[in-house]
Length: 329
Image: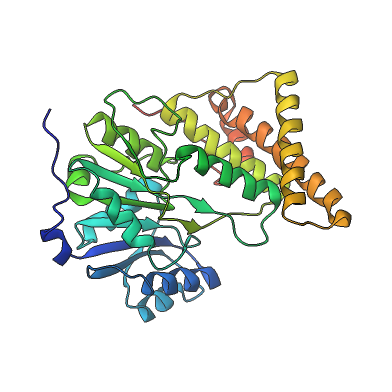
């Protein structure tokens, strides 16, 4: 099949690119995100578009002060809201962020756009997330290890396959930091799924014959620190999403799980020492690491088996308070 031509490096230079962000009470971090967008160095006009879900902290006014067009919405949905932003966007390419994902440097947007120049059929480009300064060792190391595995040599990675299998490096995409070609989206929009709309989009784009790029240079600063309960619930939601989109069931074997947790804690301890964490703080780091990996294992096991749980239990396990289990058709 002939490649879909989505990016023509000459004519595209004069067309706008849109940066789109769903927002609800973005707070101080939203200001950081918007300031970082304003600082981008890119040779195309930039449109800033925000979908605001009934914020009560002045987020909509803050966005307007940075020149954003604000689209008020009554109810957020992962796929539906992003489709709305795509419909309203003027850009031939639309870069998506979340309200707490701060572009890391002035070349973030140029880095995403460069991914479309690698081939005529690139429809989707995503970049890495880096942990916030002061993030727990387990959080920072897990993120660094995952994104390094997507491109060990630091070069942009281009993937094509009509039979994608995931979750994997080939199918990975995060709407906290990605860009979509409008021409491809018109054929392959976001699915109206309750979670993991980015993973579903990557699958659909690949199956439709488009290419996907991972661009290591287009990073954002984005990480979370949760209580144990909130981390469990967030992990439950993520792994339920992986089950719904990919059919993935996390392997469950007590001995193997304990060995994995032990290995990860040891790696975190070495990482903390290499970063110069004082000896008197290492015990706290180790305890935090043990909690992180144990809770992650429990949330992954439960989330990927969400189909076996009653709806009321799913609600209790979910950070989004979602009762359903909805496999991708």
